[in-house]
Image 1 (spheres, chains in turn red, blue):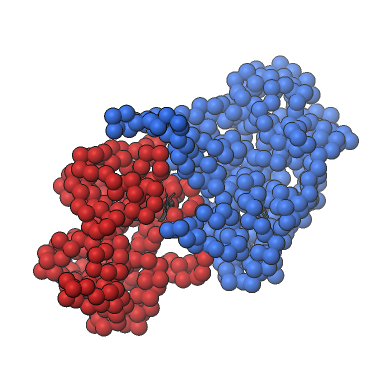
Image 2 (cartoon, rainbow over the protein chains, first blue to last red):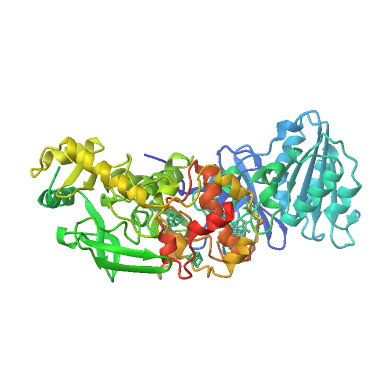
Amino acid sequence: MVENPYRLKASRIIRVIKECEGVYTFYIATEEEAQFGQYNMLYAFGRGEAPITIASKGEGYLVHTVRAVGDVTRYIDSLREGDLLYWRGPYGNRWSLEEAYGKTLLILSGGLGLAATRWVFEEAMKRPIKRLIHLYGSKDYDSLLYKYLYEEWSSKADLRAIIGTSHPQWKGKTGIITDLLRKLDIEKDSLVFICGPDPMVKACVSLLKEKGIEENRIYASLERHMKCSVGTCGHCMIGPYFVCKDGPIFRYDLIKEYFERKEV
Amino acid sequence: MIGLEGLRELFYLLSESYKVIAPTLRDGLLVYDHVKDFESLALGYKNVEGPALYAVEKASNGYFTYTHPANSPKAFLHPPELRLMKVRRSDGALSFEMERVEKKYCFFDVRACDLSAIKILDRVFLEKNSHPDPYYKSLRERAFIVAVNCTYRTSTCFCNTMGTGPEVKGGFDLLITELEDSFLLEVGSERGEKMVSLLEKKERTEERHFEEKERKLKYLKDSIEEFFDREGLAQRLYGKMDSSHWEHIEKRCLACTSCTQVCPTCFCFDIVERNSLESDCSERIRLWDSCFSPSFATVHRFNLRQSIHSRYRQWLMHKFAYWVDQFDSFGCVGCGRCITWCPAGIDIRQEVRRLAYG
Ligand SMILES: Cc1cc2nc3c(=O)[nH]c(=O)nc-3n(C[C@H](O)[C@H](O)[C@H](O)COP(=O)(O)OP(=O)(O)OC[C@H]3O[C@@H](n4cnc5c(N)ncnc54)[C@H](O)[C@@H]3O)c2cc1C
Ligand code: SF4
Ligand code: SF4
Ligand code: FES
């Protein structure tokens, strides 16, 4: 008997945090094993499934942050503490954090991409990383995720955020993430993790290359259309790769050929 | 060795334990369908095919005078529509009833190209998949395969270019080759052996029967031209991703999805929800999908493959290059169906040849 990969499990939602309008973070009770970088398929009855990154993990729970953009995600964002969430996973590969031991690790997150880098960022704070820098760009003040964690994060790492438009409560910089990156001094043998929209990834990679960081030291987490998440439906293909199972994280030199070419 | 009566007996023997899927005539097409009586088989007919051209005619003599049906075994092993599960909701909690597919099919008359296509689907769904598909597995394990060696071809066949035919090599339970005045019956599995032992109308096979088979196959093989070299093909195509030829194809391709539907190896699917009027029950359905459809590569309501040439490139590159990296084989078996059923008459053999060797 082979295990049915489409079978869904139920987990109780034990905590809900409103990040901003239309974005909620859910803590779900589960003992399931998972790795930073992986994602789950979250199910909404009668509506379908959506791939959602595991934003963090603690003793007996997993964390998901969901932005309501369509049928499935809107339903999930309507759930509250005590409700059941149905899901399957975890799927995909993990960030290659060990490669950064003894070196500088630079994390670049754009918008909701922070959900995909948060857990590995938290882990990195506990590991033998020489210097940990996290640049985070967000559209505006309201859409900044995890504001309640910045104080703690800033005490353990070099966290720099930038927002698109100024705001009375914002003391930091305004602009886009590449403005921060351009000014950054960084060693050539640093390791870089990126998650954000495709154009942001491309722009960051070209700046990094100017700084002498080679493409095989850069990892990006990609977003593609996914239906099965187990390498069978074909939707997530990019060149010869299935983003659902070969990714979502790719070493940049391996994916570049397909990622940079139009409409692959 | 069996005669026509032996063939009839075999057909009914198989019908006792299996749902027999065989080539039959339907609406002027030769198709795989459930066949209950021997007389409904398409024996003695032939299919005439060319780019955007199809006809069925009566053959002048012989029985297995056609090549392969318009549809393929994929339509049964990976059905166009399959329920994965039923979901019920009561008191805010959901329960799931996973679908069990337990049909026992006998494919009566599978040609070399389609047999290779089944082996390719085995890799996609089971062997090279770390989450083997239980639905495919269940249908596949139960399937009994009677393969038939082709003794004719149509103008769209290019199995020898792809190295899949015309000779059937392994992967069958029984294998039939039509000879001048009888049918050579070969056994490929224990199940096949058992079936033959139940057969009453059979005769001893002699050396000359095998010789006749060899002769016939060689004659056929020599009549099918080689369109391009398989060696290094994937690498050549990887080098042609920016070729202007893709845009030339776009002028003809309608993105109608026909090619992906008739293809015996195209596996892509969608999963959709089917909701009923009683709002407490929903079904999750797997439907064939196509890389030509505009929703296929949509992320946040934006189709990453806007142009039709990028979708054609996805299809051809997948079949002849990506597939090799993914599953260690080509995704094309040279059956020629996509050539016949393309309303624009796009001939994939020519496109590959022009792209890679032009
Ligand atoms: C690996 C991965 C991790 C992700 N992590 C997160 C996360 O942590 N938080 C978050 O809010 N969003 C995340 N997304 C995006 C999220 O999956 C989509 O926003 C969601 O699928 C939209 O579904 P919908 O039904 O609500 O929207 P609709 O736009 O109504 O539906 C879009 C349709 O496209 C399908 N689809 C499949 N994959 C995607 C995709 N990547 N983008 C858009 N549509 C898709 C959906 O199943 C649905 O059928 C992630 C995507 C991927 C691929
Ligand atoms: S690509 Fe065309 S010729 Fe090749 S297997 Fe598919 S339908 Fe047949
Ligand atoms: S190649 Fe032909 S069959 Fe395939 S999508 Fe284009 S027009 Fe349709
Ligand atoms: S999501 Fe189905 S193959 Fe990747």
